[in-house]
Length: 78
Figure (cartoon, rainbow, N blue to C red):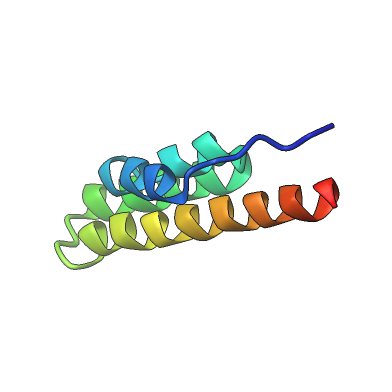
C-alpha cells in the first residue's frame, strides 16, 4: 500500500493551532492523542509557559512525522 504524501508545513500549522491535529493529518493517531492530552493538561493547570510550548513542540513533532512519512514513501517507490 502506498503512503500518501503529506505536507510537513500543513502538519506543523495544524498542530500549532491544535496540538495533535498535525499528527492526525499524518496518521500518527497515538501521538496525536498524546499531544492533545499534554496540551489540555497544561492549559487546565494554568501553566502559561508550558501550555504555549506544547503547541510549538507538537508542531515540530508533526513536521518531523510528515517528513518521515514522505521519506518512507520515497524509499518504497524506488
